[in-house]
Length: 240
Length: 281
Image 1 (tube, rainbow over the protein chains, first blue to last red):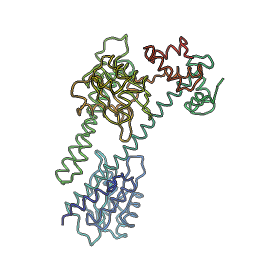
Image 2: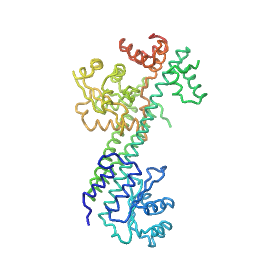
Image 3: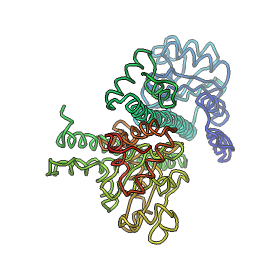
């Protein structure tokens, strides 16, 4: 059975932040992807995991309590289809949890998944390019039909879309931080030069001597050079 | 590693060019992959992702070309007596002119630093600084491209217009250096090659400049040693604020007004004050 185009479009709209178009924060996006996937892809449950860079603590979400618990367990043990897919950047094709392969690959994860009522899983990486920042895991129960090729392609598209949204958000934050650092650096340079001029004139010093005076005071008082400079320029500090 | 002096600087620019080419290649490969996915799945999302990668690739490629041109210029530079050619000279060249300047602006759109390709574009930035009006400020404030030519220049900016026309310029184009949610300043290009101001090339150059100045592994707001922070002007403002006495902002306005009235570059006026040759009190 094909998935109605409207249903697919609605999910993409929701992942983009709804009709308001306000970008979702990382936890919301993960939760939305996990929540929308089962209905659209015809599986019992879904889980998501993301870590935007090597230093970031991975975050997880699940479409139901069991999926949430399983994702947390996967994270703790470093096992499971989502972990594998995130690390390899490739999809993990459908694997049954009671089979030999699953028990060997995920000795702790596979039994736990069975306990929670899931019989098999398929995972798709959240690809951003050469690396993957997370994974979408589809969890099936005995009652579900296997994930068709068409649904698998759709699942990968959803994962790619989520990955792009996450990377855009990440880049936006990085660029915002760099911009404000740059503006701060440029502004402090101005105030420091002004303070040099104030001190040079006030105490008949060269600008270099004035700077030494300014820096000496900042060091002795353990204050930021630009804060001391600000006080000098505003006439709150003399350094005579 | 030798990075000071023209040959070291050229080698560094070659390395940055190679890095930018690699990033452009990677982005193009990713775009091709996404276009392939789009064909396979029929999902338009992949085309949108591909477009993002294509845009990034174009910007990296443009960066690489600027760095290559900069390296080449440094390598063929023959007059060790003067300062080496500034990075902005290759930006100007890419726009088909000799005159281009970049201004880093504060949140109030005032100039915090400036880099210019040659003396006339530098003089134009000085005019904008001293008069507080002009294309860079307007481009940043409105977040849009400003194009003015001929008599429109004087009509648009009553103070700056006639003065910049007197420098010999007949057209000015200014573009904001936009980040995903902000603006670092503007690029102003004077008498560009006809047609380039509205072209995609121009957009790629400004995108590349944002990466050169701010984003990416090779970003350097000092533009490899050619950014002028007007340190002397701010020192002079500090001195004048004690001499008058007055707030430092008023002292700066006094210095600008005096420089404009005397027809002296503002940096030169400031140097006279700092060296005690002039008091504005």
